[in-house]
Length: 205
Image: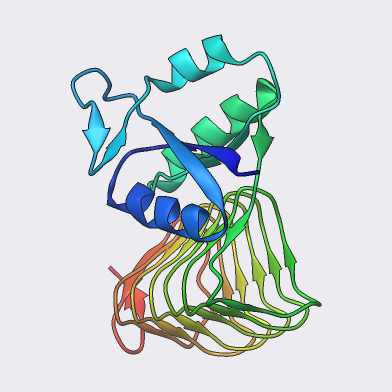
């Protein structure tokens, strides 16, 4: 029997998550706060807003939040948790996940991503296409590891940070909370909280 999954957030990111969900045997329903101005995403109809979803909620519902913005994703996930939704984790069949890795609920792992032994990934994260999270890394809640990022062993990335596409982070580096690492950067020094860095080597901007 096919299981239903609700996706909150009807965007390009949501399309990819819907594709992952269908490959895993789910049928999907979309909810987005742009409804009724926006009524569909590709061939998938949008059923209503997040408030509509909560109002209709009478039985356990599996849900994933498909919103790229870390702050908004956190808000929606916490709202759904407060209303007793079942926040699930999705892993693309072409991702490689060590049996010793720990991935918290609400995280989505995209195609080609690798999460190696004893890595820990927090709640509501995005581990995007072909990202590498090496052994003993720790990723904080609501953080986005973008496509083709490489985190060497023992890297720590704080909560609600954004590591831009194609970036590389040297082993044992710590990146704080609410940081932004620009696309294609090389991080070789620790980054404190609330800092934006770019370049190779990455420096504050």
